[in-house]
Image (cartoon, rainbow, N blue to C red; front, side, top):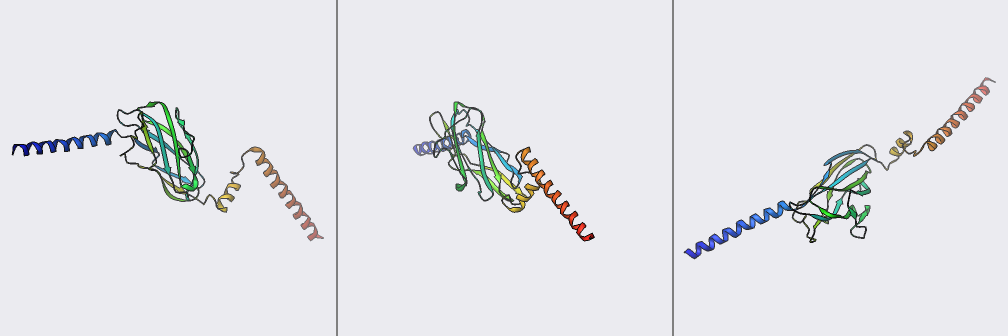
Length: 219
């Protein structure tokens, strides 16, 4: 009977210890987040996503890989810029930005490691049309410590940002016409002046032809 009690007591202790260590493991895991969590842009405008890395408790992290997945029918990936001390790993698999794959992967090391939350970088997308979509972290993301252990394991990967695009289709003729009318497609003053003079000449020709027509009618 006494042996049974000892076995039962030992089993309870093991169970409690298991719960304790699992809770410690989940608490100390690194996490990813992004700002803002919600964003509204017009078709053709940029959507900027700031990626942050929060290291695990009492952990010094050295390397990070972030995968961002996005709906390619709604967004076009433009650029990604790393922040501060991050040293990019520009190699196949570690640095991917193919719009056809609807995801981007960016990897970089942090010399000396970091123990406080750090901005990893800024991803810029362009809204192709009106609609609603979500940019999320992918499962290829990881955060490595000094022993190359992935401290992101077990952590929940949250949605990055919910983006709502409003306005006309950025690829349609209506948007292009609106851009021309607003001179949004002109990149410099010389181009603007050239177009203005061209339109002015057309207007003068129109007035001259109209005047000639009126004289012919009077005769």
